[in-house]
Image 1 (cartoon, rainbow, N blue to C red):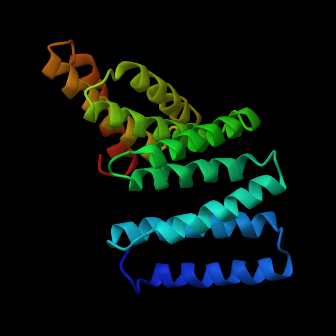
Image 2: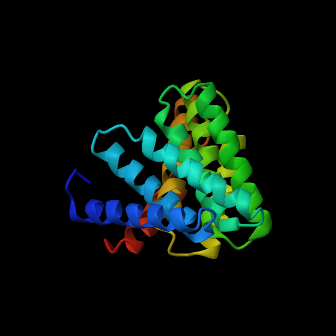
Length: 212
């Protein structure tokens, strides 16, 4: 979204409303969760508009950490925290040590969320997304992809099983399989099954989005 977009303006107002609520009740779990989610979304919009999202993601991380610490068994806070850590890691194009630490924290947060809420499709999705960053890193370094692909695919399949209309999980699955199929083809290894699975996942995602 570009600056001045009506939806962005509404999110700014919602952010301010949450901030006022936290002045009254500093440990309000709902206000912290909502402001953290708003900050994450605004960070993503900033990135799309070629603006620096760092401060937005930092605010999201801070709020969601507070929410998860206030209630250690809050699976939603932990899932949202995994989302923010993953988004922060994606910012590091070189996938250096800072990004790897974010990936570790994302996987740790999502795993805790899954332990608390085994049927959370989003927790599985964000854990797979974090593993996906390691997959991209391995691909760039021409390192083995299969163990990471298997781990990410297992979580994505579980997310889709829990929520068949999870377009993001279907799209992510397509992308990972397409990269793996391309790498296998270049190496002279069997790739057709992965390629077909990639096509199937994209077809399902397009259908869910109303393009089929």
